[in-house]
Length: 173
Picture 1: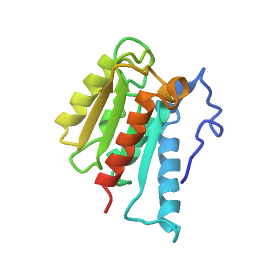
Picture 2: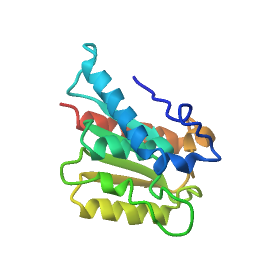
Picture 3: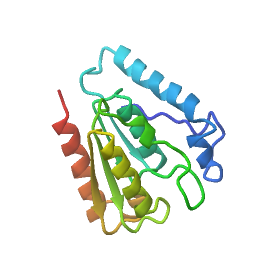
């Protein structure tokens, strides 16, 4: 298991986290691609079965890895679908990562998410699906944003973990 930290090298914090998606997007993409290359070079790793799961900001980067076909499949838990501040969507990503040749993605999101509003997620999901990318989503009625922190071991968390492992198993080679 690899767990890349892209916040520390770029001086990111909750205050400037949106810089992740624009100012530092390309260097982070290169870094994550490097992580996948390192995994593929590791003889202990099954190159045919590399998956990614991400929470919030990490869910955005799952879309990069799966959208560009670098992994078998990815799951985004309460991911970032609107990668900018303000009322409208001005950043084309993560939608622009997706195409017909993308690896499958499962998005898990709660309707009561106050950080990544459900209506923005739905809008982006419909754009991804219209690209022909293999994309699924599941909606929770509770949990909000960061259900792991708030409801660890609760029904939303347990179901999300179960769905994550089922999705990965479905896409194993």
